[in-house]
Figure 1 (cartoon, helix red, strand yellow):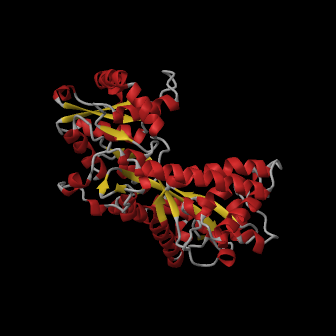
Figure 2 (figure 1 turned 45 degrees about the vertical axis):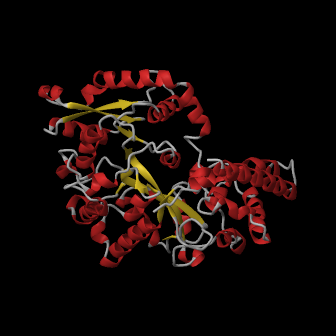
Figure 3 (figure 1 turned 90 degrees about the vertical axis):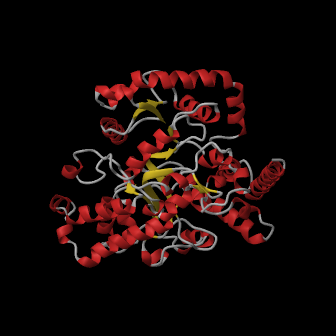
Length: 466
């Protein structure tokens, strides 16, 4: 669980002070805009949800998304065909056809959450959920789940619910997630997940004969080093942190600035054979692990994780097909929960599910424990799937490895810590002067230290003034 009373003062990425100023300035137009969209959502999206004529008597629930996936549209249609007392209408904010840019669509979402009246459900995965939580813009879902007879908070993966719990309030939930992290050869990185920043920095030095993988580029290397490391670490007064910052920039200068697309398919094979150092892999389906298992047979493969200060293994989780939240100023919270309750319980899944297997359109790992177990059993026991993935050729030990990988990845996974972004931006911007030969490394480090110290001082002052 995140206790973010102090930390949230530093998180101003997607919904920051500037964004709120824009919202206040546009307050009058926001009210008109939101009201118009509640009235026009049915005419804009009514064809997508497929409901009987008598449903016109149902109360309306407005669901705002950037773009609606086929899976979501089908779930909404299934809900609207039922006798639930509500009719869900989807409004897509991003539309190339209507000449609405991605930036304008995001601003509309932010404005709606800050206005007097918001949509009833919002998919917030493209916004800064930390900042929304700090501003009190999202409803606490805990009492809704506690009073449900269909779904319970304990049904979901603990680290997923913890990732979206702020100061004791559970304010958003994805039904599916993707997990990404670094993989390496056990003979190179060790056979236990987890390593420190210094261990990763020392990797290339220990194995100078190994090439860096085609996708291990400069900006990614710095991102890997800083993602799960507190920003303040890099400016600690002792020399160790500054020495690691210096070493990180020195190594980053030797890495390419663009992807080598020709090596995409070779990456896992090179790592498993001990011919390259690391590969970053996105696990969004169980079949991804089946794919990686084939490379493990070549020599070895392990999810080592992103580096941390204490060596604890870490992976990034991201919502797949939406991060669902109820705005605190939603006019129809009961209707919003009526849909989400059925949705999270899996009762609105496509009707052809039994023919195509569970979650065939979801492109993500289920966050519901029962659904996760169902998918695992389906992949391994369904005759068609076994033939497609050649599981018949796998023994029990190999299947156990896949399940162990999945459990490790889930245990490692956390939401992207957005507090690392501002200082990483400082490192990236100032590092370019060193990479281009405009400044020496020592000069670059001094500027990074000065800018970083000023940044933390200003944000600390802002926090005390709140």
